Length: 396
Image (tube, rainbow, N blue to C red; front, side):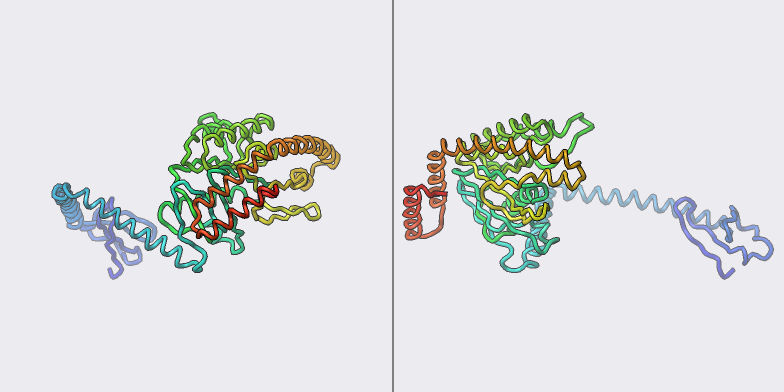
């Protein structure tokens, strides 16, 4: 039987496989447990069965002896477990620094990652910050800045859908986390203060298991925000309920966060929130640049100062979606009336709070100069320019 094989499986142990073509008459009587299986015959013998029993017994005894040896080893090193655990943590940290941080930085051009600076109560300033993950996927990723200080602790980010607001918020959080765990950050310059926690309200989804809607979850998450040393990042608070209630909740939360004096980045579609900047000088409005060409939105993904309303971008999307022209025309007429009323009210607020806003801007500049690393001549010249700008009423 030149083709006889002796394989092994857990259920049977070792057994014989004999091709039927090699069996001319019938198998000898010494073969037992004969089973035909396709073109082969599976069988065993008394000697092989005895060896299988001895093999299982030896394996069981080996397992018992191994367990006794391991338990004895553990008893001997139990007193040194703390040292071994600390050693493992140190090795993991070195592995992370060498294989993760160093690899990330070494694979980028020299000027792509920078070492962040830290201050106790200074501003959060990130120049040309980038998303550390998305920039590896898109070679044309557009960097953006962020500046928060005690005199300007809230930034409202506005812009149409898909203009880059959520990516910008995630980018800020990731840069802060990378900096605080000791890594270089994807930016040209970064000066941060250590935050105790990062509170975020990003995402949109229901919790069916707990019978919680999107609107309920957003408010529940917002309730936990209360620390002055925290970084607060909010994306579209109040959009999952009625317009009036959503604006009211978002406005009230902004006022609460302003009183807490936490550094806050608040992204929203609600243009009514821009009126906060006319009443609170420590609120800064930013927007993502978008051009409207031939009734199409051209996204630049570049952050700019101030409010820029893209005229009826929601109606443009509705037209692309196929809503009837009569419906869109009526909606355009209604939104024009609402916008005109809001602009009139904002102009009145701007005039009323102009002096207070200029005073806050002066304080903001002084705070920045306080934490500046520049020389005395530079600071003296900056103070002189600040005085002249304030006297002429051209402070921006």
